[in-house]
Image 1 (tube, one colour):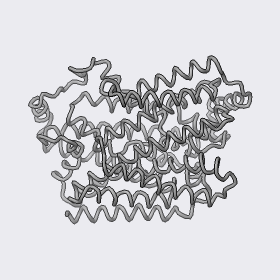
Image 2 (image 1 turned 135 degrees about the vertical axis):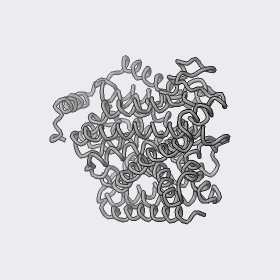
Image 3 (image 1 turned 90 degrees about the horizontal axis):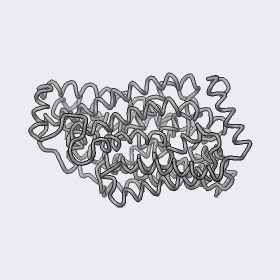
Image 4 (image 1 turned 120 degrees about the horizontal axis):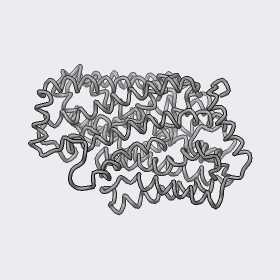
Length: 493
């Protein structure tokens, strides 16, 4: 066991737990625990949003896909970059104002207030969807943790998953949103640093572009972005770029927009986030391409360890430990956010609404912390016996949120007459279409988010023609929010 790497990881874990303890007593309300009191600055908001977005798949799943399939998988990165830009540009400001205006701190609660649902169905169903897909999503991070520890310390995979889970649960349980965001700031910085340093050193070591091209030719891999063979090129590109659609419906990313201190801070955050995402995605794609020239035959899940093997081969254990901690950062910065949003779904959208409406703030925070443990245990059980690659697990959960919530967020912010009946029907239809599409095996032809997203949008449009929004309070509230957006006057929020 490399001593340098072990020491680095121990220091890293102590640092995270220290942040958790520091923020433990600063959470005096459920809004503090789940949104940090809406007081996040520009850098924290930007790096927390993107670090929580780019989980272990960025440093393991995406490079592995590029290593196996070549440049055709780079369309995933392109789609994600476009989706990031549009999400910040179109959604962040309006969502920040709207959730403040309606006094909502979770996505299900926002949907209920925005669409004027008197039945509570919209809030309940969306909370259930969050719990299902975030449990699946969190399990992908624990799988990545297991692979990282297994490769680095030569420990049993199941032991590695349990150890990683314990650390993540601990500081999320203690510190809540504030701890998660401030650790994400550090972790996001470490991730982008690793994705700059490792490809630069590896590129020189492998022999440059010529050596990579020769390796790709020897494996019969395409060098062009245009897919060849199999699916029609246009369908293959659409399927890969459709990852970008998922951004509009990711609760853990949208929560960062809600937590920003002001619209002015969001504008600063957007510029920081876009630069961070461009560098990170470009670095991940480059790692996969260089890996083709550096390693001969990685397959059967080993391809997702290409970044780990690259660091181990190029750096001494002390430097390598810091760079490997970047992978752990990617994993943990996403799982902690997912646990927190899942916890909010159980506390705000189930416990406080259906079980004990007059619960104290202290009691709600305690329930939220207990929920973190329960959800973590379920995700852990799934991770102990993974049935797919890291990228495959993430794709399903990412698509689930995109198909279920993406159209609702867009219609909520840009079409004032959308009714709660249309929103509920669209959400259920989009989710069902996505699951069925995946189950019957059509995802190999087209990423399941595409039919799910389209079905959701069409259902909302059709139902709204029959039952439009008639609640005057909801319509007036929408107009007030749009006025604030146009004025860009953050002092009113």
